[in-house]
Image (cartoon, rainbow, N blue to C red; front, side):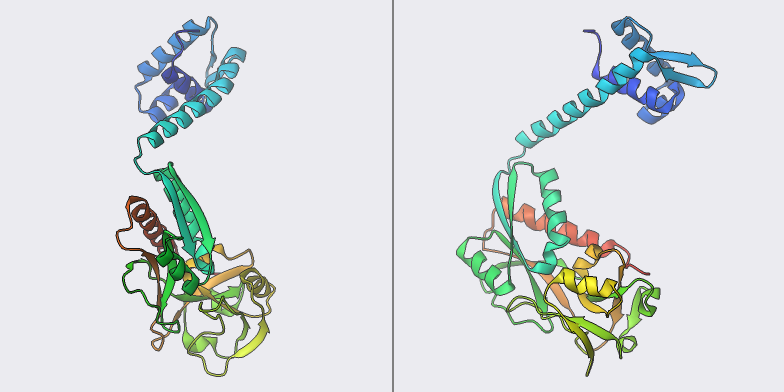
Length: 306
C-alpha cells in the first residue's frame, strides 16, 4: 500500500469512470501505455487486480471499487490542502467591509464576494446593505471599505469629493414582465411599447432610487404599490403588472418572470460605482476589481426573454 500514489489514484478513478484505458489517457493527457503502467503499479501496490478486462473495456473489481471510492475523498482533501496552501501565499489578509445599495445585493455583491473568496482566501468580507447617502457617510468615517452606489439621471447629485470612484457596471434600468407577456418576446422594446401597461411600483430607502414606472412615461397606470423587491417581482410573476428593475439585478428574477431592455432616447441612464477613501489599500483595490469583474459578467449575460 505504501507504493500507491496520487497520480495512480487519479488514473484508477478516471479509468473506472470512463471504462477504458484509452479514454482515460485522452482525458488525462497521458499516453495509453502510461495509463497501463500506472494501473499495473497500483494493482501491484494493492496486491489484487483493480479491474476486470472484457471485450467492451474494463470495469472495477470489488477491490477497484473500494479504491475508487476512497480515491475521491483523498483527492478532494489534497485539492483542499492545495487551496489552503495557496491562501497562505496570498499577502492579502484581514477584513473588507463592503457596503451596497439593495439592488446591488442581489447579484453583483454575491458574485464579487465569491470571486474574492477564490482569489484571496485570507480576506474576510463583511456585507452591509444601506441607502447610498448612508453608505457614503460610512466610507468617509472609515466604517465601510468599499461602497457600491448608483449615479445618474433621477438620482441625487451625491458629493464624491475626495473619494476614489470606479465604474463597476454600466447597465441601466430594465423592465420585469411575466413569462408569456407580449413585451417578453424580444430582448429590447421601444419605450412607446410600455404605454398603457399596469405597473407594480415601490419605494427604495431614502436617497435611493424610487422605483415607479419607466421614468419618461407620462401618466403611467399604477396597479399596485409595495416596498420589497421580492413582493414586487412576486406580483409580476402572478401576472398583476410589470415593474422597473435595475439591470444589474436582472439575473435574480424568480421563476415566472423575465426581463427586457428598453430603447428610450430621452433617458440618459445610470451607472453603478465603487467608492473608497483616498489611498484605499490592496484589500480595497482587490474588492473593487472583483466588483468590476462581476459587473462585466452580468453585462455579458444575454437579456432574458420569455
